Image (cartoon, rainbow, N blue to C red; front, side, top):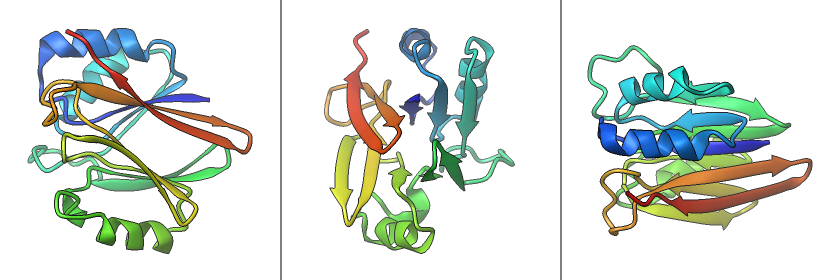
Amino acid sequence: MLIAVVSDTHNYLSILSKVEEEIQQADMVIHLGDVVEDAERLAEGFDGTLINVRGNCDFNSTITSERLEVIEGKRVFITHGHNYNVKQDLLRLKYRAEEVEADIVLYGHTHVAKVDYENGIWFMNPGSPSICRTGCNSIGLLEIDEEKIDCTIKLIIE
């Protein structure tokens, strides 16, 4: 199963059309918040499943800020990350991942793409396709195939 992981789109409509193109090959899209209305827009043109959580900029949203999903037999913890101070470090997020027995953790908030593997857990931050803090706008691609997990970062070129 191929999952497109998107975060921190911040209602940049010009870049959302590029993201819409990139996600078409995926079976599922997970939007990690900031801005939940963008997730709704992505869902309109997408045939697969879309899961999303709210971020720190989603003030009026009633959508949950985190969730645990079992996808292809893997426990996937989904959060924006601001409640775990991920801009400082991943310590709190790692403790939470162990607590919920996650195989994979998806988080955003920092606008910096990053993939880590620690203590048997994959951590993926897809960065931001619109306001990346490293100059490289991006989304994440997560492939789960039987026992194999592959996390990659895909650059979004305007």
